[in-house]
Structure formats: structure tokens, C-alpha cells
Image 1 (cartoon, one colour):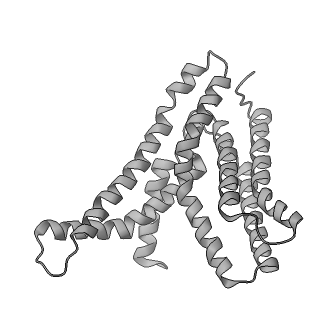
Image 2 (image 1 turned 90 degrees about the vertical axis):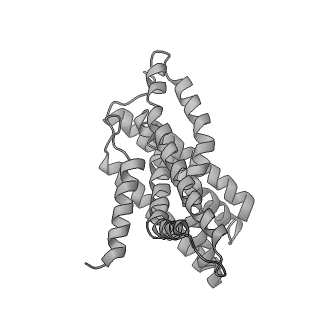
Image 3 (image 1 turned 90 degrees about the horizontal axis):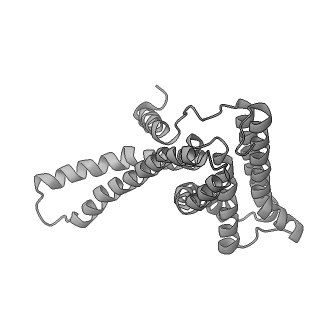
Length: 247
């Protein structure tokens, strides 16, 4: 096996994360064309970021900053969704016809359960690692429960951290399985999330390097292209699959 035990750990963590945070229910539309377009947009966006760094900022630290920023956004995205999603979902359900609202509200238990699993995952990691950090003392003896806690911490570090990272990725991508409520809800939440991050990046880091026109294109290119793809996906749902929110 190429990756040995680490490959098994990553596959195991990913299977568990997909099962909990990327469910495919009877409400979800499988559109391979839309998936390929989303992937192409992601690749082109990453390539544009690399070209921008090469063209206007050759500082090696810029690569490290970009990598850390991307990883941080993946981990923060679920928490941003927890804050923004209730407002978006409330407006989404309110916009739906009155006779559909009870049905949509009844399906909220699936995303809520997904959020619960995510919060529980974080709580378990903190509940294991914090006591371990507080009880580490090389000068005194160790009781049996300290050894058990150390073993649990090892499991969290080796399997729990990859699982939490993959859970964050799948949670952000599926918007906590919001498509289980309505297929159109996930693209709407995606548009909301990308603009929230655009505002956060503008406030925190300012405009990217380069001439003014390049700065504006770099700052707004990502959110605008994600919005365009999401709107195209919504249009495709309506025209190709007959999915609508209002007649």
C-alpha cells in the first residue's frame, strides 16, 4: 500500500466525514456537469492567485501566508455558516409559497443534526486535549486515568484532527447538508459564504498587490465567479431538472 497506515487513517476519516457531513438524500440533485464547472472554477481561481503572487509579490512568505489563509478559511467556513445560515434559511423559507413552508421547516432537522455532529466533534476534541494539557507534569507520578487520557489524546491527534479538517471541508461544501431542505438552498448559501469571506479578507488584509485594476479584479473575481456559477446552477436546476422555489 502506497501510503501505509496514514492512507488508511485518511480514508477512514474521510468516509466518516462524508457519511455525516455530505449526505445525498432524496432532495439532492446529482449534476456532474455542474460539479465539473465548479471544479474548473476552483482550479482557475487557484491558478489566478498563483499568477498574482508571481507577478506582483515574489516574497517567499507570501506563499506561506496564502496557504495558511486557505486552510484557515476551510476551518472557519462552518462557523461562518452557523452564524449566517439561519438568516439566509429564514429568508429562503419566507420567500417560498406559504403551502411549502411547513414542509421546508420539517426538513431543517437534517442540517441541524449535521451542525450538532460538527459541534460535538469539536467538543470531544477539546474535552480530550484540554485536560491532557492541564495534567501534563513530568515531576509527579501518573494514575491509570492519565494514561487513558494520553491514549485518547493520541487517537484525537492521529485520527480526530484529520476527521475534523475533512468534516470542515465537507460541511462548507454541502453547507451542512442544506440541500436536504431544498436543492436550491446550497447554492444560495455558497454565494452568501463567499461574499462574507470577501468582506472579511478586505477588512483584514486589504486589497491584494498590483495595480488598482488588478487589485479590484483579484478582490472581486473570486466572489463574482462563484456567484455566476451558483446562479447558473440555479438556472440549470430550473430549466433542466424542473426544480423551483416559487412557480
